[in-house]
Amino acid sequence: MSHTDPHDLALTLPNTARGRSIHAKITTNPATGAVRYQLTGPHLSGSLSVTAVAWTETHYPDRIRLDLGHETQHGTIVDRPTVYGTEADGYHHLTITEIPDLTRAHLNPHRRDDHRPLSSRAAEYLAAAAKAILTHWAALPHRDALILAAARHYAPRRLAHLQQRTIDPLKAQLADLTAQLHAAEELAAALCALTAPATL
Image (tube, rainbow, N blue to C red; front, side, top):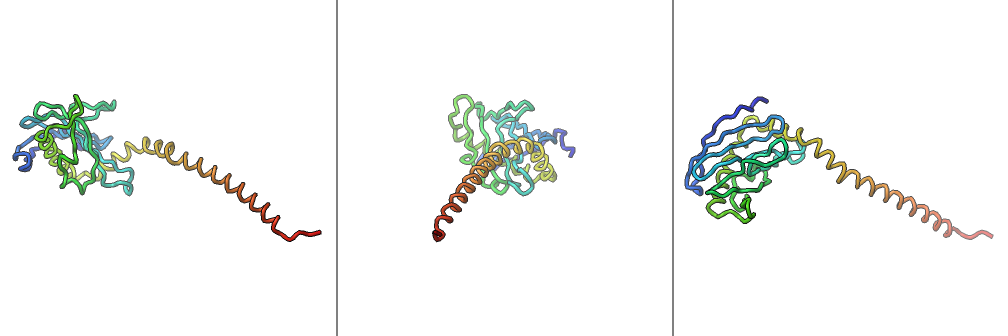
């Protein structure tokens, strides 16, 4: 997959955002499947990032995550979007089919400085921009490759989490239940012997 070269995209937002036109410089990380949209427009700057959340081709294949900002290779979020002079923070999980219905109520962005909700005007604008870039991402011809790249990138971490949080505890429960069952069966056998007719 060779879609790493940044390229520019012009987006016209819907009437809910006063029909504004914004520009996005798009950069794809082929190792993680993340797509970064660096936005510039009236009263708007900063990045929105889209990453697939699919675990495998059959587990959550249509789940995506929208981050307000860009995650560096060290896990730090930088270049958060600034709307009407306010830096926004947050993220949102959704499915591809939910993109057309995305509103500010779903996105629920908040101010980074004090974690209060953004103003209605700023939140509406940011949600419109998010919906536009998510719609673009969903239509990418290499979307399936991005989903697979993200799944491969996060697979080791998810496997470790699954082993530690699910498989190991279930094995421990199974061993405990097996021991309880064995003890119960021994008791049942003893009780069964007592029910046999007594012989003199």
